[in-house]
Length: 337
Image (cartoon, rainbow, N blue to C red):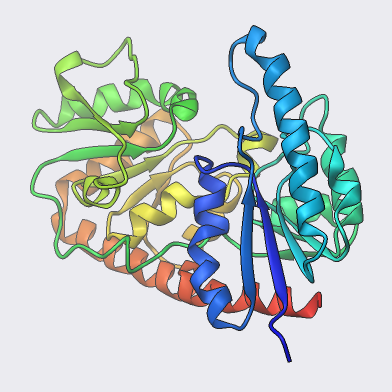
């Protein structure tokens, strides 16, 4: 009997969702007996920032997306990452059934959000990164919840705690607004802890108005340093505002901190609360005083920080590691054949 042919239609090489919700599973899917190919967007599923460039980009992306869909029609199953072109329903109606749709953000928000539901209606199953997303997409058909997995071999546990007092945040610059909401709290913490610094690992340097410039250290994100930079944190931050968009987030930032043994302080929003519920890996903070108290306590108590880090690693290994979640994804895929 020949191997079932699985084609992934992904949104472009640079998209984090491709790396974390498709690419890291490929070896497991192949080992499970699937014949796998990926047809990624050549022009990215997301419009370029310049208005002038958007017209040509859309034409190229639309043509490329149709080509990929037609090439996928000889497959037994298609894995669709979100949509072919962000915020739009285009050629998805021509995908040869069955196909699964994978969603890890609240892509149904915004003026064109209904397109996500239209695609989900055609999917055999919509794989959702958390319960909030699953609740929405359940209106359109079958859903299953599959959190974003952490590769616990790559994001390796560090022994002990960071020598320096490093308050850390890692992520895309699009999330800087969340940091600005707790800037007052960070300023107080830096005042209480003269040796502490705020370290930002991102694609570009942030701009703060209330923090001493010499106490903010920026490191440009690189794949070579992505793990070591986290391991140098004393505490990892994940602030959010309680909005529908934030509730759709899959807490991946928080999980990578925990995987390397860094205690966390996070907003109790969406999936963050679920992750904290698995074990004492850090603290939830909503108010300025709660952020100040939680971060200060971790910086001041190395034994506590180490205990929180150990628990965090165990939580990731038990609930969110690739080794736990890959078999679940493979089972979902097999049941669609």
